[in-house]
Length: 193
Image (tube, rainbow, N blue to C red; front, side, top):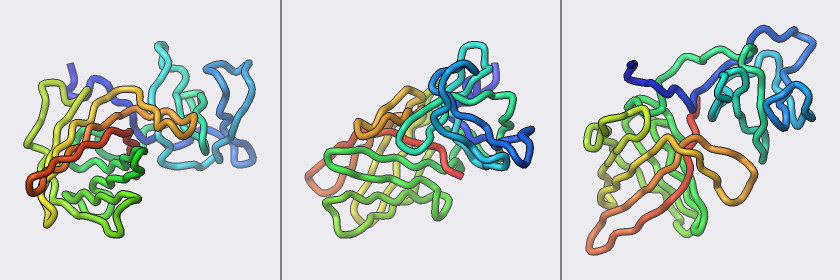
């Protein structure tokens, strides 16, 4: 078995679509269902959250909803598996609204912000602190910064943000440890280019 037995979510590029055409995003994994959005013939870095059992259709997000595209028109984009230490992830949640960008600005850094904060907090990441036996299903990470430490578990699991009809392929439990207090957040993550 490959280390990355389950490759999703992952980024893909549109391929094999004529320059004057588009790739349809459909309501269900069937060519007989309504088109809900479109991808340009040359769209890049489209996150495929999951695929059908026969791998013919991939679940993607379009605006505030999700739909299905024919996988024969997508090819894997270059980049790291979501559980690899160099992967770029964008995580977030609600109540309170918060965001965590992992490796997006500088590899090895996580940047946290919350609607209630007037500032962002930057942490150095240690992916080795919590590697699991099945890194294709879950990975642990931690980090430290001027505001203390954080730890997180990111799992390959369907996730919904509660604010839209989007689907996410990763969920996250995020904890901050600083001073005498600990705080926790739950949310969803996407793979980013």
